[in-house]
Structure formats: C-alpha cells, structure tokens
Length: 248
Image (cartoon, rainbow, N blue to C red; front, side, top):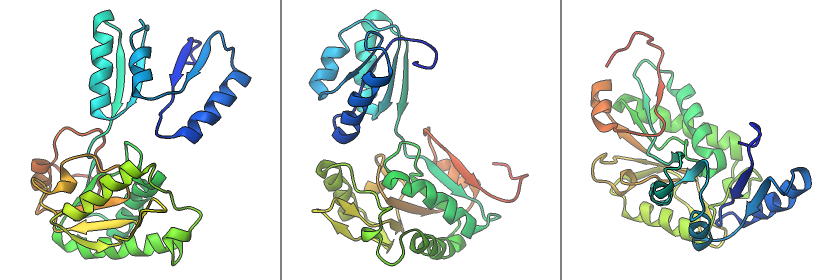
C-alpha cells in the first residue's frame, strides 16, 4: 500500500509489543505523519478502528480475526485481503531425497520458531521414509543449534505465555509419540524443536488447529492418493520429490 502511494494506517499486533514500539518510533521519522500512522492497542482498539470506513483492508492473522474483519468491512462493502493461518501439509514422495526434504522442511518450520503462517504444519510421508527423515532432522537441528538449542543465540522463544501454554497442552494431549525433542521451559518460553509420530490425521489434537510453533507431526501414508485424502483446503502446500511425472 505504501509503495503504491496510498495513505495507510498500520495497526500493529498487541502480542509483539517490542516490534510495535519500534515501528511506532521509526515510521513517523521517515514517512509523512499526515499520510501514514501507526496504531498500538488491544482487541478493543482494533474494533474501534474498524468502525471507520476504509478503502481497503489487509489483515494477517487467525481465522477468527479474519471473520471479525469481514464483519466490520461488510456494512461499507470494503474490499478485504486476508492472509490467514492453516495446517500447511508437506508431502514427501517416496522418490524424494529424504535428507534434503528434512532440511527444507525444518528450515521452514524453525523460521521464527514456527510462528509464521506459512510454516510447514505437518509431514505426510511413506512409512519407510519416517526414520530416515527423523535422523536427518536431528542432524540438521544439531548443525543449527549445536548441542544445546535453548542456549543458542538463534533459538526463538514463543511469543507469550498464552501461546506457550497452548502448545504445551497440544503436546500433553496428543496421542502420538514424541520422536525428537519435547523439552520445554515455561520461564524461558522455550520449546525444543519437536517431531511427533504415530499421529492420527483425523482425531489427534495436533491436527485440529494451526500449531504455530516448533512442533511437527508426521503422518505416514501409503501413496499420494492416500495423502490427498487427508489434505483439505490449506494456505500452503509443499511437495518434495524427484519423480517429475508423478500424478495423483
């Protein structure tokens, strides 16, 4: 919006106060305050802001936030673009290089501690790929964080205690088996990069909502068609393979 020359109001997230403060300080220094303004505040402040008539609304957030944005925009027929979270399946075909696949998947999963809406949500792979994938993931994580991920300067913390407890509950209620990681430190808001196997794609707690954290479920499938049965409408789909002629 700014690059195209539009005036804009930026409502920053209340769950990232440090980033919000930096933006509130920097934007007025470099952009005309008559045209660009930063709003800080909580959910109630967002509701008040949305009572105004805008020409366009762009929102990145959860599905519940997206619904509230649409409801607020409806009376004015304001165009809306929503970038909402999802489960983001990653299918690893039997023709894939499993070590390369593990590196790519965990690169995406560990970006900002999995707290981005396009992070891989879960892996679908053949049974014979599971152990190789996990071992490759261990090697990659050790390369990234040495022997102590918690002390690494590259390790990201969970954004706040509410989301830490949400992730902790998911690990406590899953019927799957933790194959890698699983350590947590509530005082430090830290969760170790974690892989969970033997996950039921239809009923397990880890498969019912966007995880938005460093926890990766693995679901074994017998074929691409089996994977497609599980995959529904998602924000991002990823496929790793070497057979360029594969068809569903």
